[in-house]
Image 1 (tube, rainbow, N blue to C red):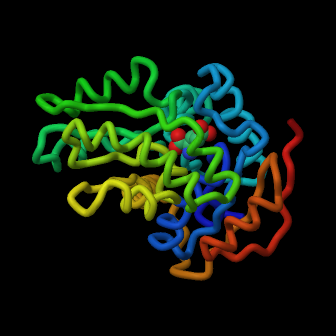
Image 2 (image 1 turned 90 degrees about the vertical axis):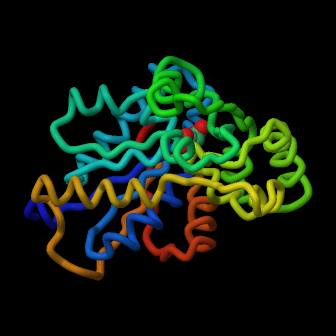
Length: 266
Ligand code: DGL
């Protein structure tokens, strides 16, 4: 396999990164992908940074063992905890993602933006640095959406319990004047219809998947790694967790659910 025809690795703690994979597939239909769901360790959000870093290295090793030419860290929490260390230690390009504080700050008219993310993404210096750099003059309110990742992993994307949980988290942000909400975790776009219902049409919801796909295209071109094939790319499914839930969500999102998930030893 030449470098250009090697696959692109994509990983998340679980099913959230599938929202990024959707954007990647539509922008890069000729690339082969390996999607790795680290469900045995999901959620990452409440874990110590060192542990998330260990998982990011273990998953990257598994993706590289299958020939990944570039890795997309389709998880805000893992990017914040690990992408700098991965770049320093591993000799392939990485594309990471972080909550869209910068575009939200450019877009707000009320001057108040809300960031929905995991506890792990919001705690710590890196998020503070993001706000200090890109949100000058804008009030940034944060909400660690406890339990949302678990809902998505269980396939609960709607219903009274989900609505109640979502409303309880977003209402204080709306009451405080937010007119832009950042979906700062890749699981959250899967709850987008419920979130949109709860906040109403006057509030803009921002997600990062499409921007990550555009950045991946740029990096593939800059490094000469883009697959010359224009169409017909495949996806290999990998992970450490529950193949039944994984398959069910793939089907629900319109991905081909063929192919066995190969577990990585824990
Ligand atoms: N989907 C992940 C993110 O974007 C993290 C979810 C988790 O495992 O806590 O942050």
